[in-house]
Image (tube, rainbow, N blue to C red; front, side, top):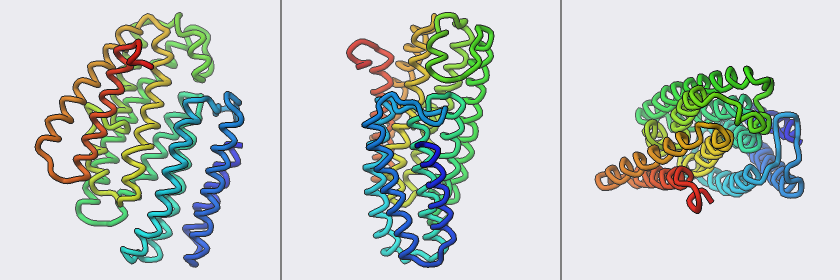
Length: 315
């Protein structure tokens, strides 16, 4: 099902980009939304079903997928109005909608994947696709925000990749040959705490670019300020949800190791620092999009604090 979804998404994106006819492009975009809704409904009727080797319709993933689908419908609808109001050129409009399809597809896969390596790949794919959308208006600010986003995301994704390598190497020492989260959970108690701590620190730091929390929160703030408003709607919501889900899945594995307490303290500290940064910035910025961006830093800081605190906060 998921493999077919990716194939359809790629074909739709290619059709949107190469078709010269605007009504045909919009029809393809509508067809993609139908497929997106169908996949979401399938997920709700097939909880915990494995699909295409690297994907599972677990409850957390399906919840995030449903939010992504609802906001995608609204984003595509408002993108049509946005294109009309701004009198987009044909080539810019085709590029916009093609990469919007690919961006949503990448986030869909990241929400549903049960494999740490596939998760990294799909999050990197979301970076490359959304960078084109951030650059869409081609202004000086857009160029600056796009390059800053790509640069910081490249650093972040490199750190996350290093964290995966450390975790994979330690897991391999205990007979783990697959980076599926279920497999890692099975052997979590056997993993050495020091290597797990290093891996988790690198992963959280790297994914903070996408989640928009301390220390790499500035990339998402600039991107949200510059991106077209329909794209901003996805940047400030479902992209953060997907990044949070990635950290949460990794934390679930780490919480079953001897580094559990340390990992909780790391999330608690990250959340507190994010809250402090957001509070300081919200008291001085006046640009509405930046204010909303820092509000997102605050919200996810609170969520990380809740997970780090445990108990009712974790729930």
